[in-house]
Length: 149
Image (cartoon, rainbow, N blue to C red; front, side, top):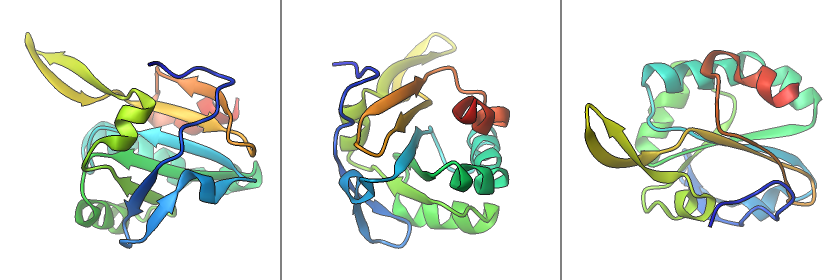
């Protein structure tokens, strides 16, 4: 089932880089940028994370909390955060439960070979937990501008 603007964002629980469990419902009362990306430390994912990092003050000023989600594990996230000096948390979705709840684990194709992977997608969620925007055509180098437009 595809999610749409106006729907309540599915709640989830996952581990962040510190090993702590967080739930989306922990952020009720705050606006959330929930972004799904394929893999830590790859060029596109690094560009996207660094764009959010470099504009983090503007995102905070606009009232946003940033959470990244990939299928990488906690150890990988911790290394990525330290290397890129990211000021926000990354969720380890190793069992793909968050991806499945948001419809971001999809069949992809490269060189004619089909495989399952993450659809780079961002969900903007309001203080009440409703989806206000879904960005499916993510510009990794200018992602903050897409969110704040």
